[in-house]
Image (cartoon, one colour):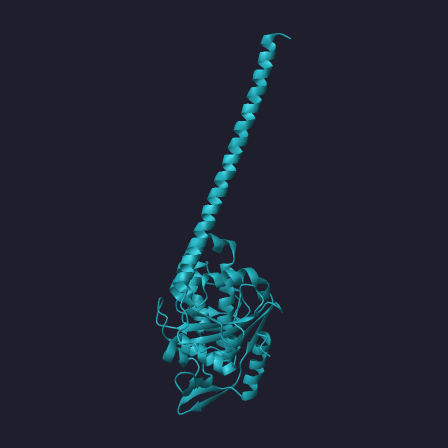
Length: 326
């Protein structure tokens, strides 16, 4: 073999090695760029989410510490402690306004040990002691009299259980959230008209924010009264949460976060939410719904829902069992 031929073969091998190195380097650069972009997007989402939760965060002022929490403080870090969340739908005169009356009250308990979530709906007209005011009145007046803290303390007193967290939602602004997720699909539980909208029982209906608000607000023409309205409000909230979790909503997360920051308040810190997401996800797969029920009566020309002692005891025992306080 001549020196010239050996030189050509050596040159070809070097060319192959060089080409291989270039291709490898290009692939590495592409993976590095993709990783960097993904990391940036991840950080951007994380940053936007943290910023939104910081805007929504508002602690409960003057909350009365329940005895059980004094004896056994809640720790969601490990994902072992059951906890409660009070959801308040605040009826206001417009978005970005968190004053008014809590016409929707739902108390959630989340138990990681039984992997179950329960939702107790509390009638807006429930006649009970308004803690901090020293009077008996409708439970939804507690928010008008003393905001979140008076409502939380009143619910704690009613059921003799700790309220660990709260989430208040401006029901007028709820339509912004529904619009941000691209609308929701709901199957009406009865046929009725509200304003310009008509709903047909059993017929799946796509609703934008305004239509969802009208659907959830109707009460006077519902044969079940406020109980029927609470059922429809639960439908809207559940459908909205399902839409928030969809892929389309993830791509539109900034609009959703913007609507939430304007219309929701909570005492859950960002770290609490992350712990709940990581440690309690399996607990929301099994959801049990309960309704606190009573009988309507008029006193001095005002309508109240009178809840029998045995009914309060029934719900109270259930809540204590779910929170493992028995």
